[in-house]
Length: 227
Image 1 (cartoon, rainbow, N blue to C red):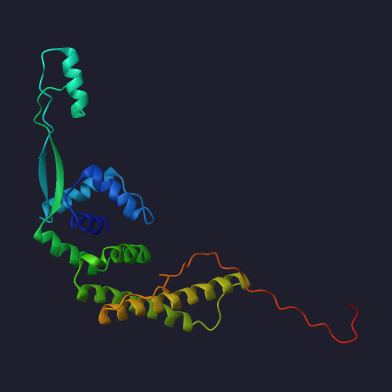
Image 2 (tube, rainbow, N blue to C red):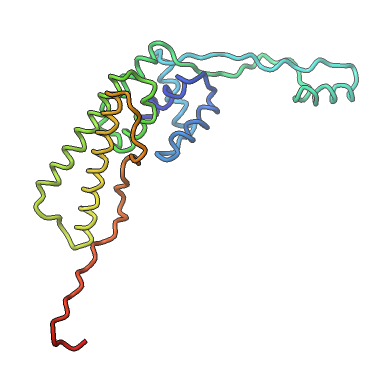
């Protein structure tokens, strides 16, 4: 999944490793954290298979010496840098290649059995604008099939197991799946008609365990009974 995010960000512009980590944190923060220990191995893999390439930027030119310490410090302040000896060090930036463009679409449409289904879809949807319409529709259709299967499986369950709290959670998740299905159907329709998604659509529902249990019915007071 990290490769998808890296290629998606590099489609916008070349980025250095530090910039990539920062952008990944902003993009994936709601999904998972990204460390240098996971980022740089991913960059090396993408570079090896030709999906990205290195762009070397020359280091800033050193401030020319003026012959006096006071003059050197003043020049350095104006240039926004400290006096330094000439250096051949360069900053390494990465950019996506034509092979990486194709790889990005392949990864976006690939099924990863080891990935968290919900996180994977959220990540792919975040970069959907960078792929052709046919690929976007295919991704949404796959998500729709997952949701339909989930609802069919829930429908075959005659009665939710457990106590009333477990049953309330089961019903909440079922309703959340139904709302997600309606939302995906709206996205698919918008793709095919070219119309914007309705402002009433608020995205996938939260299926977390936060549902309140169903209220207990209030017992009827029989006529003549003591109040």
